[in-house]
Length: 106
Image 1: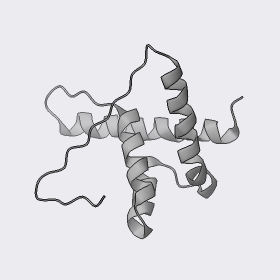
Image 2: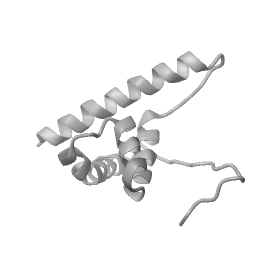
Image 3: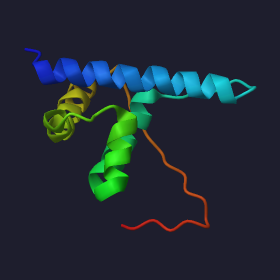
Image 4: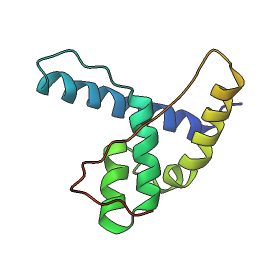
């Protein structure tokens, strides 16, 4: 059964994806392959690890500005990834590259 939060999550994730595509095609003069789902997943994880203004900005970019939706995002991603893993034809992998001049806190 699909909840109202699931529908809101889907809608906001699609808004993020469309905005991301618009930004990529307006700034690149070459072929680009991106996965808005992977980007939103990684950015969501990073946002949950952030605090204050940084977290708010990240959630704002993702369009997850509603407090109830923000609270449910981790649970919704858990359900989505569980569904993907139940279907053996879908494989998901993510990788994040960080320039050497930046440090990453564990």
